[in-house]
Length: 488
Image 1: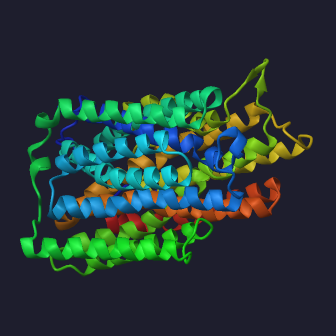
Image 2 (image 1 turned 90 degrees about the horizontal axis):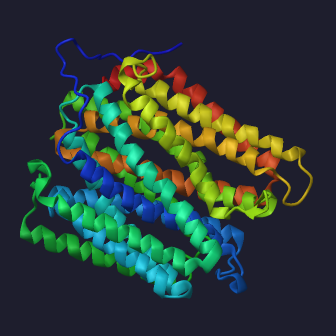
C-alpha cells in the first residue's frame, strides 16, 4: 500500500517554477564534469581487459572489475574528505574550483602517460579532484533550493540530474566513438577537454554564487590544521607501503576499499548521532535516514553493473553489427542515461502535482529498485540466443532503458531527503554520506562482477534481479516507520 509523506506543502508554502540565479550555470558545470567522468568510465573496463595489441592493458577480468569497483569507491570516498575540508578549512566554492583543476590533470595523465603508471596517476587525481568538487557543488545547489517545498526541491534536483545525465550521455557516446576509431588515449584526451570546459564554465559565474558558499562553517585552529595534514601524510604513506609490499594489489583492491567505505560510513553516522551539536529531532531524522542510505547502496550496487558486468556481457555475447555498422561497445553504458534524460523533463514539472510526486521517499526508492531488478530479470531472454555474439542489441538496449529510468526515483529524491534531514552542524558532510552510497554501491558492483565471471549469465541475472526484488519488499514493509522518523 502506498505510503503518504507525513509533511505536505500547505497552501501558504511558496511554489516557484523558475530556478534560482546561478542554478543553470552550476548545472552546466556539472554537465561537463560528468561528460569527462562518464566518458572515461564507459571505456575503462574495456581498456583494462583489451589485449596489448588492441591498446589495452590485458588484465584478468576479476582484476579489472575489482579495479573499476575500487576506483568508484575511491571517487566517492574522497568526497567525505572533501566535505570535511569545506566545513573546516576551505569554503565550498573554492573546493569546487580546486577539484576541477585536479580532475583535468587526471584526465591529461591518462591521455599522455601509457601503461599502469598513467592509469594509477590519472585515476588517483580524478578521485581526489572529484572528492573536492562533487559534494560541494551539490551542497551549493542545495543552498539555492533551500526555500522550496519538498516537491519543488524534488523538481529542482531532477533538473540538476537532467544536466548530470546529459553529460553522462554525451561523454560515453563521444569517447566511445573516438576510442573505437582512434584508440583509448584519444578518448582520454577528449575527457580532459570536457573537464576543461567545466572549469571555464564554473569560473564564469564564480562571483555570483550564493553568499553561504563563501563560508567555512566550522573553521578549526591553525594548530589542528597541522594535525590534520600529518594524519593525511601518514594515511598516504601507509597506503603506499601496503601497495608496494603487495599486501594490497589490483585483485583485492576492491575488497580493501569496500572495508574502508564501510568503516568511514559507520564512523560518520556514529559521530553525527552522538554529537552534542545535534538536536533530538535531528538525531531521530538521521536515524531514520540510515535504512534509506542502505537501500540506496543496494540500488547503486545493481545500477553500476553497467560499468562492470555489462561490458563483459557485451564483449562476450552481444551482436554489434546493426545494418552493416559496428556499434561502439562503450555506447551501451549510455543507453540508460539517454532514457533518463528524455524521461526527467516529463517529471520535473508535473512531479509535485502527480500521485508519484506525493509518494513518500522510501516508496519512491522501492519503485526505483524494483524497476532496476525487473530490467535484469528481462535479460534472461538473452538465454534464447545461440552461443557466441548473437544476443540482439535491441534486447540489451531495452533492459538498459528500464534500468536507466529507474534512477529518477532514487538519485534526486535521495538528494532532497539528505539536504532536509541533515543537522545544521553536519550539512555538507551529510551530503557526502549520501554520495558515499555510490562508493559503497561501486564496491558491491565489483564483488558482483566477480560472481559474473563464475556463473552463467542466466544464473547471474536471476541472482541480482532476485536480490533487488527482496530489497524492494523489505523497503516497502518498513516505509511507514522510516517516514515517521525522517519527517520530510
